[in-house]
Structure formats: structure tokens, C-alpha cells
Image (tube, rainbow, N blue to C red; front, top):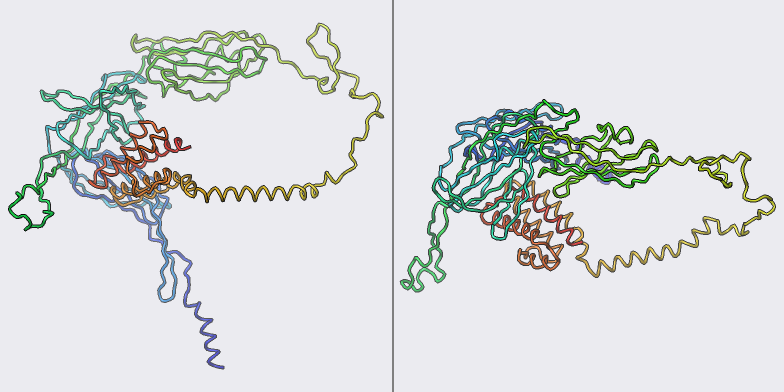
Length: 626
């Protein structure tokens, strides 16, 4: 009996040995700065990470103190994990919370540069990273590559477009290039617009990745300093937002250029002694290209942006610079007082209208005198060389006969003076609103002679029948039909049958085509896989995951084996489904970039840009598959 008691007591005590400690041990709050190398070239970008431990919601740090670097924010992500350990029967849960800010820094000058301690706010505390010293070297100079910046003019007015052009001069083979253009980060100074490019069949064009997306560059040939170079050039349209003198810092291109060749010995497939003496050793030698890293800076530029003159400026001038035309249309034009009228205003003239807005119609005194105009104004829509604005207005009185001319003051840079563009007045017919009276509700209409006025019937409520005895009971006498219980009992069996039939049909369709469900979920799976790819430790690992995600997506959509997918097979299948050539070209560039990253370690794209491009192509493919 005693032994039995001890056994029972032991069983009762066993759970106490395995105690789960509900408190989660989190690492202390701290911040650290991380770089991959302590020696870089001037103008050559390198990754810079700020890793916060102990908090997954820190505030973005201020990096304005890094005056010796160009700073580009690459994004941030949470870095959380949890684990459970059991030591001596005690179960403990550990929670690790963190966040990583990713940047790209480009040194502006040579020497030993210091990244100072960066303050980071997290959970109400101020953390500081450790200072880091970077040795910035002068890159090897070469005459095989040049970089030049050009502006269509060195003076302009605020709001006047200026064309910025970058030309890359080459006379050597290059690979794995990357452009850093500080000008494109000055969004507080300019609107940036990609110009329309008339692609000619006898020209070659390339898509060049930049920090803010990509541009289309044109290949050509040009002489510089008496030497003929192959050129790759692209342009951006700059529209200044404000006046001032601006120094445009040099751009840089970092790349690897072919410096020569070296021979390498291939293994003799027949063995060292087989046919010895019958073949020269050179037969089994191959040439391998030797590349060296170079960073080439461009020239700097200056741009003077003038404010438009104050003399002669119209009171309702809204910053429109260039030569403008304005037109208007309205519908309907035959209305009652208070009826909505759709007013369509069209602006034209300047080449680039994406950023242009229509001055508030509430500032048009003649228009507000006769029409009610909403305070909120709809955004315009760019249609080719015009921008169209649509607004609803309502006439206030029946004596309104026209929609007056709408004025648009602008500063004409060619003449150096202010002009006013005007629409033509639009004739309208406005009738007085009909007043609804009690007679409309009484149900009796009396003859009205030579009058448009409606008089109220004052003799009380007019019935449809003179004698109440003619009103008969219309009841069916079968109240069961009105019972909800009876209706439910009658409709439930066919409803259940229809539900069962629908479920069976769906199951049979899935069994008949099990890949259809995978195809429908392919795009969602791609987005999920691309997010996971961004958490990889290195650029090459990220590229590998992006490539795998793309092939799994295409495999599910085209019902192919993902591991066996090559672009030629995908191209043929998508072409048969009507995929446009431009879309296939974009898809091919992704395949080439991923394959280059897998086999040579150089893609020509940042992993984040490659992921965005992959998602953009997939979105277009989704429209094709529908």
C-alpha cells in the first residue's frame, strides 16, 4: 500500500518538474551599424544597415549628418523570432524582436571617412550605433569609359521644363554596372518626367535600372576628344518647383571592364597518358576574361532657376509657365435651376502636363456669380498632349444664359510676359424649378387654363372612391401561405438540394482539373515568395529566391515543371496566348538578370529593383491569363 501511495505521489509531482515559464526573455534594447567592407572606392555605393534589437517598431533614424555620403533608403523590415528551450524540466520561451533599416551609401571623396553614431528612437528610448570608419580609395583611372552630364539650358524659370541628359562613353566590354545620380533624389526641387521616345527599328535600346525605377537608353556612336566611343544615353525632364541657384553634383558609374584574358587548363577528357604526344597541350586551354573594377565620375553642372517677374503678374496667376491654350464644354445645356451640369475644361500647349493643375474655379468671379461650384476639385486626366478636368456646376437662377469664359493666366517664356488664355462662353437654357405642392400628394388633378402654376386643392383629402361600400375585402382566407414557418418548410428541401448540387459540381471541377486551383493562387504565392526573398542575407541569395519564385509562378500558371522552365519555352506559350512583344522582352530581361546573378554573381539590378520588376511583369501577365 505504501508503494502504491509513493507511485501516485510521484505521478502527481511529475508535471511540476516541467514548469512553463510564461515570461518571455527578450534581448535588451540596442542599435548597431553594419557595413560589409571597410574599404571602398569613391563613387562606388555600398550597403549600410542599422540593426535594432529589442524593438520591432523603431522610428526611422535621421541620416542628414552623413554629409560625406550620398544616402539612398532601401527599405526596412522586421526581424522577429521566438524559441522554446527546456533545461532541467523547466520550459522557457525566448522572444527576439528586431528591425533592420537598409541604406545605400556612396562616398563623395577619398580618405578616411567616419560614419558617426546614429541616434535611433525605439520604445521611448534613444539608442546610438557605434561609429564606423571607412577607407575610401581613388578608383583606377581609365580612358576606356567616360561619363558626361548635359542640360538643355543653364537658366530657366520655375515651372519651365529643362532636359537633363546622361551619356556613357564606352570602348571596352563592361559588366555589372550601377549608376548613382544624386540629381534624381532632389524631389524637393523638381518634378521628374520620362520623355516620350520614338523607338526606331534601326536603333538599339536598353532598359537601365536607376534608384527610382528604370529608363530607356539609346545606343549610338560619338567622338569625344578625337576618340570614337560607343555611347548609351538617356534623358529626364526636369520641371523646377522653386527658384534658386543649384549645383548638380557629379554622377558616377561603377562597373567591371574587361582588362584582358588569361588562359586556363581544361582537364584532358582522355586522361593524361592517353594519346600522349598526339595532341598539343594548347588544345585543352581556354581563354577567360579578366575584369577589373572601375568607378567613373561625371562632370558637375549648375542651373539657375529664376522666379517669374512680379511686374504685371495677374492677381489669379497660379504658376503656369509656358504657352497655354484652354477650351471648355458642358452638358447638358438645357436644365432647371439646381440641376447638375458637367463642365469639362481642357488644357494644352506645353509638352509635359502631368504635374499641371487647373486653378480653382471658385476663383473665377463671373462663374461663381451665376453658378454653384463645389469647393473640392477633381484631379485632371492626361490624354496625350492635353489634360482634361471635369467639374460639376449648378445654375443659381433662371435668368442665367451662358457659362462665362474661364481665364487661365500664364507666363510666356518665349515673349517674357504674362498672357491670359480664355475659353469661349457656352450658351445654356435655365428654367425655373417646378414647385411640388400638396395637390401632387392628394391624387386629384384639376384642369388648368393658360397657367403654368399649380394651385393647392383646399377641399380636404380626395378619395379614389365616392362610396366606401364598394371597397371589398380582398383576403384569400388562407393565412397559412403567409406563415414564415410554412414558407421555410417548403423552400428548405429544394434549397438544400441546390446547395448539395453546387458543392458537388465544384468538387468535380477541382478533381477534373487539380492544377486550376494552383494557377489561381500563383500570383498570391509569388508576392509571398518575393517578400521572403527580401530577407535573404546576400544579394546573390535574394536573386536566387526571386528566380525560384518567378519560375514557380510561371510553372503554376502555364502548368509546367517549375525546375525545368527556360525562357524559350515560356516565350512560345505566352506568344500563343497573345502576350505583347514588350512584355516578353521585360520577362526575358528578368531571366537574363537572374541567370547572370546565379552563374556570375552580377545582375545589373539591385535585388529590390529586380523584385519590383518581377512583380510588375506578373501583374501584366495576370491580365493576360484572365
